[in-house]
Image (cartoon, rainbow, N blue to C red; front, side, top):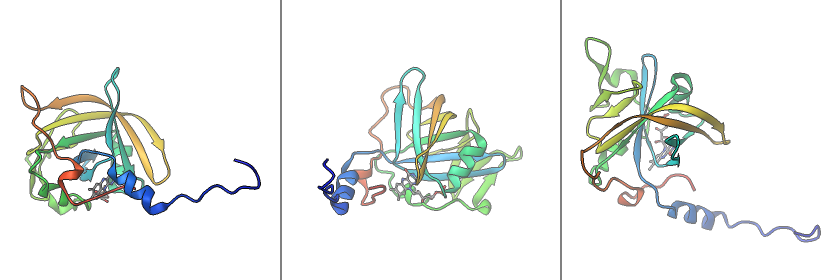
Length: 178
Ligand SMILES: Cc1cc2nc3c(=O)[nH]c(=O)nc-3n(C[C@H](O)[C@H](O)[C@H](O)COP(=O)(O)O)c2cc1C
């Protein structure tokens, strides 16, 4: 770039459409700090290392999930069956405290009417998940609008054989990011 030539302004709308076109899955991220728990619909989730097994989740810095993952140091990722897209609509706003059901030992059993379990870290996992990953936070990066939490996979659940195709953004009419 030369000093006398200003850079071409980026076409914001085109940029957003192209970013939206990046294929992503659609997941439910579980978080927990003490007695506080949340479930959040998220597509900014990707594996970022193989040794150790690291999974990155980008969370809006103002989201309840960002607060809970920071304080609790863990998160879970529930993968959903492809036809299960209705469930993600339930977790686009924080789960209220009154919507959390617990058993006699204080373990969460349901959130917003959806059965949940607690696994290795204690972060809630959707009972109807096709598979799940449970992670301990190893890195936290401030990216501006979002915080990137990188977690090591310390727990996993799913079928004995192949995991059936799971929910992706393209299965819905939703978009996020861009
Ligand atoms: C399709 C879809 C994908 C989303 N993906 C993300 C995401 O990757 N990261 C994020 O922070 N919020 C994402 N959101 C927004 C959150 O689901 C929503 O704002 C959330 O409930 C706020 O988080 P909280 O419940 O932790 O406060 C997405 C929303 C939709 C509808």
